[in-house]
Amino acid sequence: MDVLKLLKKDHQHVKRMFNELKKLAGHATPKTDMLVTNIHDVLTLHSQLEEEQFYPALRAIEVPEATRLVTEALEEHRIAARLLAEIADLTPQDDHYHAKVTVLREYVLHHVKEEEKELFALANKHLSADTREELGTMMATRQRILRDQYKTNSRPDETQNASYDE
Image (cartoon, rainbow, N blue to C red; front, side):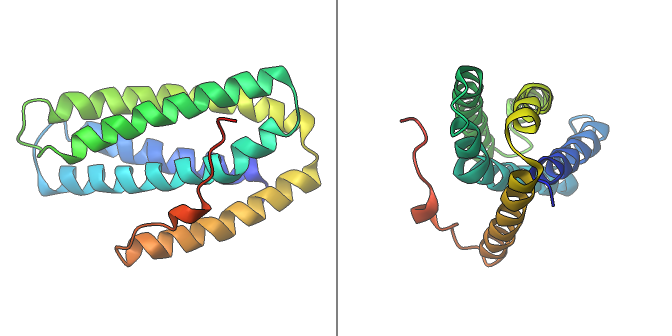
C-alpha cells in the first residue's frame, strides 16, 4: 500500500473518532473516556510510525523545504504528546479535561491538514511510486507489530525509536 494512502487512512480514523467525541458534547461518559483512550493510542502509534519511517524518508530527499516541514511536524508531535499526557492525568469529570481534548482535536486536525497538503505533496513529487509503496508496506508491518504490543498492554519497543533531530 502506498505510504500516503496508509497515513490518510489513519488520519481518517482519527477524524472519525474526534467527530464521535464531539457529538458527545463534553459529557463525561464511559464512551468519552474510551474514545479519548483510543485516540491517545492511535495518535501515539501513528506518530511513532511517522517519526521512525516517513519523516526520515522525507529528510533523505535533501530538499530544504522537506527538512523544515519535518522539523515542524516533529515539534507538533511533541506538543500533541504533551497534551495527551496531560489529558491522561485527568478524568472526564475534571474541569480542564474537555477543554484539553478540544484543543487536542483542533491541534491534530490542523496538523493533519498541513501534513496532507505540504508533506504529502513533497512525498509525491520526490519519492517514486515504488518507494512510496515499499515505505507503506514497511510501515504497515511495523504498525501491526506496534498494535499487537499495545493490545498486550506492553510498551512499544522503544529501541526502534531513533532521534531525527540530527
